[in-house]
Amino acid sequence: MTATVLDVRDVQKTFGAVTAAQDISVAVPEGAVYSLIGTNGAGKTTFVNMVTGYIKPDAGTINFGGRDIAGMAPRQITRMGIHRSFQIAQLCNELTVEENMLVAGAIHGNHRPSFLRNGHNAEARDRALATLERFNIAEHRNRLIPELSGGVKKLLDIAMAMAGKTSIMMLDEPTSGVAADEKFPIMDLVIGALRSEGVTVIFVEHDMDIVTRYSERVLAFYDGRIIADDTPDEVLSDADVRRYVTGAAA
Amino acid sequence: MTRSLTLSAAAAFVLLALGALVLPDWAMFLFAMALAKGLVCLGIVGMMRGGLVSFGQGLYYCLGAYTATLVANTFGVSDIFLLTVLSTGVCLAVGLAFGPLLASYRGIFFAMLSLALSMVLYGSLSKMSFIGGTDGLNIAAPTFLGWAPEGRALQTALYLYVAVMVVIAGTLMRIYFDSEQGLIALAARDNELRVEYLGASVRNVNTYSYVFGAVLGGIGGTIAVLALGHVDPEFAFWTTSGEFVFVAILAGYLSVPSVFVAAIILEMVRSFSNLYFPNTWQLALGIFLLIVIVVLPDGLGSLVRRRKGDAT
Ligand SMILES: Nc1ncnc2c1ncn2[C@@H]1O[C@H](COP(=O)(O)OP(=O)(O)OP(=O)(O)O)[C@@H](O)[C@H]1O
Ligand SMILES: [Mg+2]
Image (cartoon, rainbow over all chains, first blue to last red; front, side, top):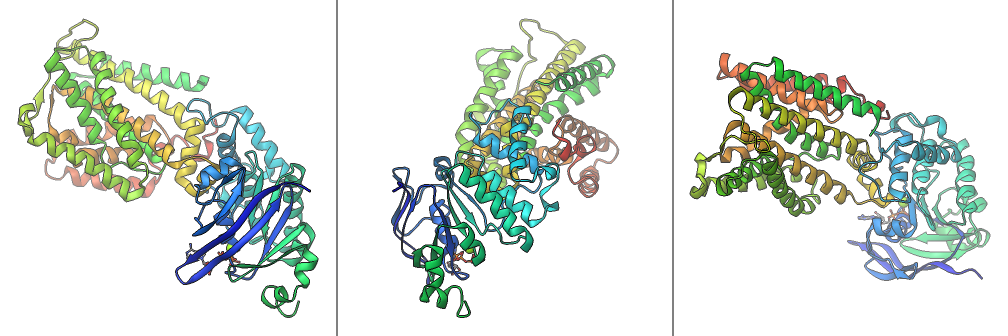
């Protein structure tokens, strides 16, 4: 039995009349790969946002690394080892691919970012290049972000998030905005890289083929609640999930 | 420090020093003032790299000038080095006090708050009759480590002093711009969310550039008051700050030397237009800025340095 790395208990969040999270409880074991499914507006992003500090839950606790991180600032949570990518890739559009990676490297280096050391120093560039190669996007290193395809943007977003010591990686729809034939190669790359480092992965996904193929466990969200928490097979054959999430046809 | 940067700094100094030999008195004064103001503008350019524009750098320009004057008049200090250190120290302290506060604001709010602070200083100084009120104060000519030049020698010494300051400050700011922190500042200008989610504090990034701006403002103000021999609350007035912003926008945030070129252009346009069309020169300046913004949106600096070529 592996230890629990993330323990979410009775978390609540409402936005005005909308209940975005209601009695959310889940315990994620270290090294597991979880996926979050649910229709639009079910509360998946809200869950990711609460764990990563973007929004503060109204009630409940989120235990990680021996502390309750609910309501902590994103920066602090990142520093503790929970990293994330975004539904819409968050990149610096005026910088090149390599420079985006250098920024991530400078913030996550072994030392504090320096006022003197050149941001483009050889060692940092080598490290950035190695990461870009690992994610198969090194050929784009000198391009600016607006010139990139959706898939490359997503990969860069994830590569940047992985620059620091990562214990949990939360990926919000890693394959949205990505061409159909790129989805599996991207997931292979990303999940492979994260797994090889023993990182716990929680990803939001609408494509059930990807959910079945890459996750060990699925959390099905509906109306701000978790209606199923089990293996992909169990969850996808669950009556409620078929009714509310995957659609009657499934 | 890379070789190319050392060479550029040396070349810049030689070029400026040559000015001391060839420039007539009036031009040497004009250049010294332009370079002193250029230092203040360089501080704004540093903030611009992180996405902020201060509309109140007159605060530090004025604070530096008044500190130097009050120290000189009260304690009889005339050494330019000592005066620079003291007034810069005061600006540093004030910058450290206001920096973390202002760094939580962005865009127009940051601009207006910085403007408000400078106008508070303007208003206060105007009312303080014991330090001259709106008339301001005079300051005696500076000495240089015991040497007390006069006439052309004084002009030249002041000019060379500001030239040295420009080269030192310009080199240090270039190192900062190119550094890891400088890169993070560019990233923050572009996408704050990304930077915060990488684990860096955008507020800290903005505080650093604000404090550097305060220091540069103090140095500029000290040299300006010593060149002019007089300071008044106008140093903190919004039109003064506006000119600094004008120069920063004209120069853009890509190149350091272009800041000083822009400052010299402004000073020249001002003195010539003042002479030939005293009533319409602001109009000419406004049209000039408009043309630059349309033709060179990244400022004069984009003529010599491209964003995507920064990696040298
Ligand atoms: N910051 C916010 N302010 C107000 N309402 C919000 C906010 N964030 C989310 N909501 C609401 O909370 C509910 C859950 O939204 P959430 O973004 O978590 O859905 P999701 O499952 O990620 O959906 P999608 O598949 O469309 O990304 C929605 O009704 C949404 O409108
Ligand atoms: Mg979402």
